[in-house]
Length: 318
Image 1 (tube, one colour):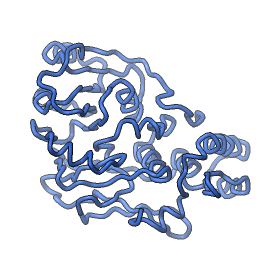
Image 2: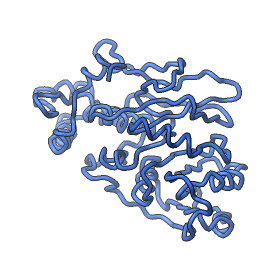
Image 3: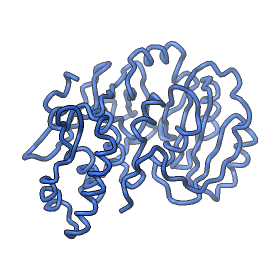
Image 4: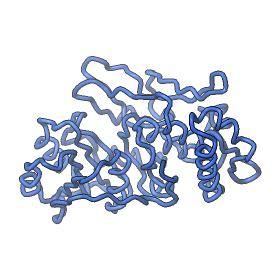
């Protein structure tokens, strides 16, 4: 596994970029939008038209198929939209990191083509209300046609000394959540960059999303859910693969092993064997991963405000 990235957007991927050379007409929101297209949606044209109607400052659309010749037609029809086509395998976190480095607005809305996009999904007044919360990320209330009450809130807990993430359906405006479901949310761009963005070495969407979100909490940021900001999936919500892997091990190293001592975070050398027993790797590979994580925590030690046990014990009070 690659070493933990030490700087924001450390990995650059080959990509083709089309359009985006003209300003969005009637832009009235200090918000950029990132649209992740995965399913070849039949609503592509409608989605782009509605995003333009919203008045976003800039629009970036990621296309999953480099052989889709319709993209050139889209770029001509929507010269205000920046279409980016990755030419090599890339995680959702990679794509979001790229877009965050290119836009200039204070806030960035991450969407997927699997949700219904309307011309009024984010209004100026709603933006003001959300900005007043001054948090790292605000997750929308996500619903589906057939499941209006499925888990949107995620709460950390412990069971037999293991982290347990409990999904809950109780929706209250402003309630804290461990992470935004499916990466979808309104992000404070500067805070996102200061947190280092998504770790591209974590290929699992679930663990990649949880890694950055957990780090945000440990570094003193907050993630909340808004009931006035509501979005609906066109189909079923995504199934999360939460199984243990090399990627859950990297999450464990970066988020669960560090301890907050005095005024900084650190990974005690004595915790190596606790990691080794659960890593599933050989001794020397585990030692390399452990050393990599200790170096990463050492570089960021003064960013920590508390550690995982404190976060879990005081959840709901922070």
